Length: 424
Image 1 (cartoon, rainbow, N blue to C red):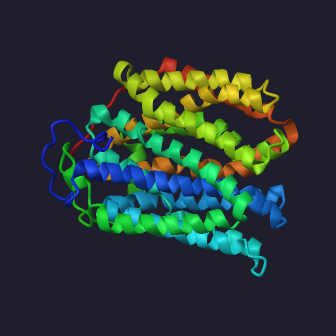
Image 2: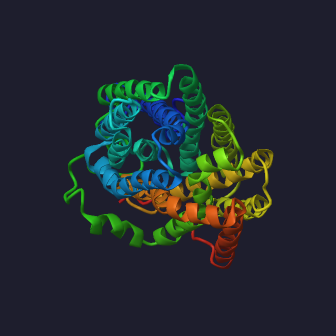
């Protein structure tokens, strides 16, 4: 696994990689990603219950989620450009320190002596700088051959799945055993450790080590980090915008459902915090299997275009079945298909988009990709809450089916061209 993302035929550690060498940098990238998601899902499994303890209703909880989404939406593309210019070490370190700030504010919100609701909203502010996953994707992209990229990126799903399982279990267990503040305190300490590892062990830049073309070293490219014209200009390059739109539109309905998932677990499924944690752990296990094993094998036998069509088709089937769902058992039966579609959609589109831009712009492109989920979190609470109150859980399945049928028809009529990796 340490060398999973390394291109073939790379024997000597390249210049700019530091003393660790490529395999250990890839391994450390996986470790930092797993650490981040473990802490994140510790928070997810307790946040709805903390909100209820502080007296926040469903609408206010939606505003809380929207605040987090807006900040990540605004910060993602700019942070990706920051990673391109300042390098992996700076990006990982800043992200870990921002996570530490979020969790220490979250822990403070649990104190009865402090204004909990205000601190809970304040804890969302560092979200603009928390972008560990796109940073890890940039590192893996820089250190992997184009033909190996979907497999290398999919292995980050092992980290996400591990974090989902461990974080969900720890969040629910620590909440029950030690109090609702305990997960936030442990996440704070863990992210300080991640910041120290990033600053001391991650190389300044991984782009200088790319075997697929010369990239300017960090700080070399001119232009402001906030140059929105340069950032959005990537979307206008050939072959980029159609893939990006499919990524946004196809995954949006399932994103709406996942935004409302914690409320659905409490109200529709009637689950307690520990039971919700077990369900999220099952979600993480399926994600580990899909991204760690299934996608890599499928990538050896099918093109990226075929995998993209397959993910959209399964979205349609799952959406149709979700419209008939009436219990948590039904949802568990639907989860494998939902996870396959979500994982395949994100891995394949990320791979296609990074191949369509210059090697020096992969961080910015992945930052734009990372803004898709915050966009859903921004629009999702309001729209999802309205749909849930007005039509019930089944509406999410109906919307997912209708949207993805249209996307599938477009893909069949106008297949996406396969792009080679651009190096200059």
